[in-house]
Length: 392
Image (cartoon, rainbow, N blue to C red):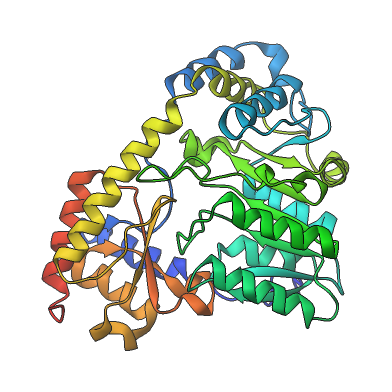
């Protein structure tokens, strides 16, 4: 039997490390998992309490609206105005999605089809690569390994010399996995380019509230003219530690929002309404929660990066995201990221993500997720010190 959309998919390399981790744990080994970016912090109490209350109301058990209930769209619009100074019309410039991955994937279906092309960073979060491919479009991968400026230069060059001309530019800053960060001036240059060349910009702002050492990640919608050509995805997964709730939004250009709304009206009835109600209350009444989450991740970043540098594994502390992007130490670089990550599980009892899982350009790196408390993170560093005997 042929499954056309998935037959050509490569193996999901993260499952290799996950299988080793599970095998080791079954053998009684305490593996410290710094691989999967699955937030460990509990969701806000107010979200849980409101969910329970709303779930007991049987009127909320019926179908909801695929666009999201009006008060939820008003709440995220209010959040964007407070956080970024961006004014949004909740009726025409906001739509609720069932997580950012669902929103992004279905958005690609509305923007792209066979014969179209998209510009995407490499390495990149896997759905940013496969979303356009699932839509039948061609991919133009642009190097991100040396930062956002290299990506911008490659974007301009690749668009100019591509045929057909790419219709979509995919961005995500702070960037997963490289942790590259940008300012509003960078976004302004992208928007100016997109407006001039009739391109739609899709910015996945997954780490909107995770910026360290005083850095506050901007929204692309802060750039002048952004709503003429851009949309942004915002998720409550990291900022509010609500990963399993699957509450996200697409915001910006009203034509693109309307197109996604039309598609989603055929596909779903929206998130369970008590979840939407709980998310609404959380956005309105727990405005400081992202700051508390951010402080925890920054403390974990400091423990991890200071510890790695002390044992001879040189790493630059990230300015944002919930990750650290680490070049494989020179004595081990020839192993490649999969074999190196496998060795860390078996020899150090530490699980990380192989860089190649984010695309070929990531192969010289591994990604640490800041998902263990400071004590466990210190233990991971100690384990690595014992295992990596070739470090100076």
